Image: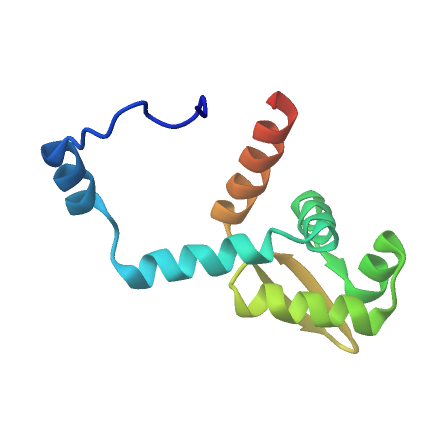
Length: 117
């Protein structure tokens, strides 16, 4: 018998119903899933961590993670679409930063949880 499965089936219907009633809307679950997909890539996490330190341009980020400007630009486009980063243009340069404090919190909590694991 497996250790991580109940030895007998006994569903607590009231508990299950309470949890079902507390579920967020499907659109919120989908949105959170998309965010976590973005965080599931080590290079994107490196980019986010770098941007948690300071605003950086695509060239600097490419040098940091040792990939091409176009590869970094592609990842940043995905992160921007997921509202994890935002950018600003200054002449011919494009600078990126984290979208808001929520992104910083997600990143820090994920790293803290991994560290404690």
